[in-house]
Image (cartoon, rainbow, N blue to C red; front, side):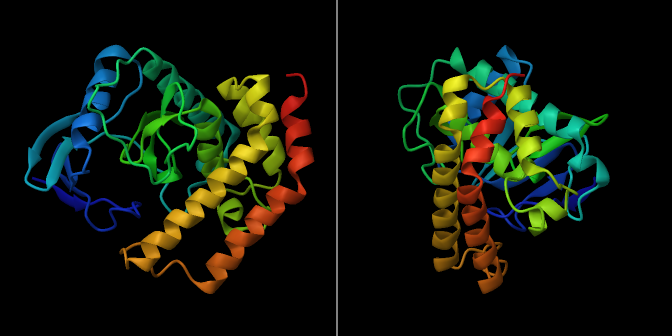
Length: 264
């Protein structure tokens, strides 16, 4: 039977192992809630996600989903308009599917990256590049729901755009790795493909900055506890790049809003 350590994760760095058709990964503390969500998605939506198979002590066993994941160094297709648009549409399908889900009364959620305002859909909150499976050039499945929690659509759109646009100086390593030269234009493509409404577009920049600052606090908390996968990458240069990204968004906030509000 094939055994393989799966790459790309940070929070579960070095702990996600493929064993044949299954993946073994650390059991999240709110596994009962997340497993109910994953089973609901399988039976009531077109959103593909790894269905839980078993619990083995402190490990959960889930399906292994076949496809392509744009691990670093990024493949050229990861920065294409087609990939970007397909991620936005998959995110929209996920949000739409959760509207009808009757959340269990005893549900518990991670607060680490959650929308502080709460909201009417379940947000994934970590649709990073490593958490999307592609097939034939299109986003087909979402992985790793550990940070999922109820929130607003605009919150999760901002969280996802942070990775997939990304919304930063084109010289930033995250943008350069995808070959991005026009982040504002890509953001417009992303929100148009998602179908974000005008009210959410107006408040997008403020929500994005809240998400960026919340993500930074989360990373710093993980570094402070010595969490593997966070400590080594969080150098002084990394902190400066993060500050530079936030400053870039602030400087371009009017241009971002104007681009998103133009008729499409």
